[in-house]
Image (cartoon, rainbow, N blue to C red; front, top):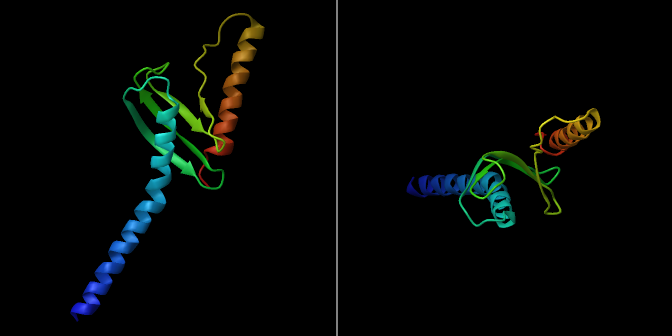
Length: 118
């Protein structure tokens, strides 16, 4: 009876560790890569970080000291490049407004293509 209980507990611990590695390890890797790419070596707080295995892309929100804005959305591409959501206001001439809107739409298209859960 003891052997059976020990085996079941061992299998449960193994399954728990495997699940933690499968789900949290990629998120942790995304956070570490983003921290390395930030210009200032300050404090960075992450929220809603996800990793899409099919597109190999990490997405989430970053709140960091030394960052351009207080909280911003990021996309970590498979090649290691880091993209932030555009923060420009829609103002100026019509041509300038259209250019800013195009950048926003391009970023949102990238979010929907890369970050959407599958």
